[in-house]
Length: 228
Image 1 (cartoon, rainbow, N blue to C red):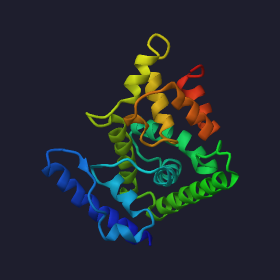
Image 2 (cartoon, rainbow, N blue to C red):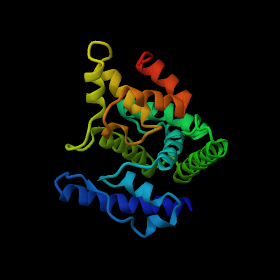
Image 3 (tube, rainbow, N blue to C red):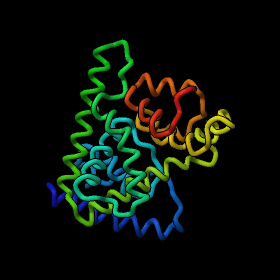
Image 4 (cartoon, rainbow, N blue to C red):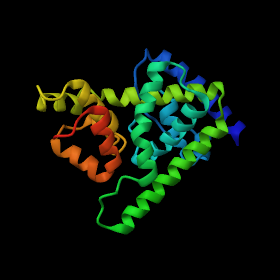
């Protein structure tokens, strides 16, 4: 299994790289998931991360990627670039809490809340196992870099889409900086993966806290945003 996943990722990374350069670095929407990837439970997720294409992951997929990230960071020290590693650490610092208790903490329906928690924990575990199977290899290092590239790509948003960070900075002008708003969006994505491409509302912070109070604590400590 380890060899199979590594071969799939390595070969398709080469194909994706050639397509990337031949298209003059144009980032397009992700196409159909290749057959080989479909053998993995999160094959479409791996393809979206590995390929230079545009797609925002679902909450469950993002928790899977968090599991991959935790292993590659803690066991391999990937990615080796310090700035890239810091980005991955910030992503993981909040996503790990979603992997543990889910994003339905405030749901009054206990069954739904527990179901989301179980699904999140399972996805996170599959991510860790997948990364362990790949191991601290060249493929693992490139996968870690690809996760950071995905985070950067989706944080930029589309030209014709709303921009959460810009809206936040404008709303809190003179109170919170754009850097703090960027921090808010980067951490808030653990609960709402597409947050960077949404319109800002102060109520969104409350929704994040209600969905997962531990992510709310990360916003308070890392972003220094507490009064909203």
